[in-house]
Amino acid sequence: MGKGKKKSKGKQKLPKTKCCVSKSKCGRCPLRMLKEGTLPDGLTVKRRVLVTTSGKKVSKKDLQKAA
Image: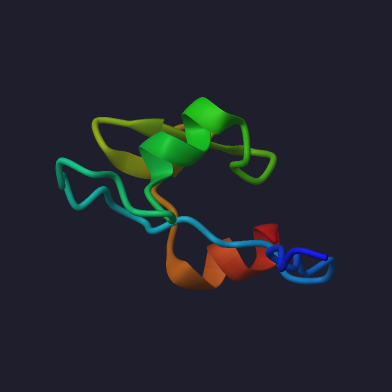
C-alpha cells in the first residue's frame, strides 16, 4: 500500500487576493486556480488581482464568505 495525499473534504484552499508574480506559481495563486477551475464561484482574476465577477476587489473577509 502506497502513501497518498489525503484530501480534506470540508476545507477548500482559498486563493490569495493578489498574485505574487513568482516564476513557479504557488498553490494558492489566483491565476493558477483560475486556469485549473478551482476558484470559488463568483470570483475571477483581472490584472493579477482577485475580483468578483462584477469587477469589485475582494477582501479577505469576503473571501471567507465565498468559501
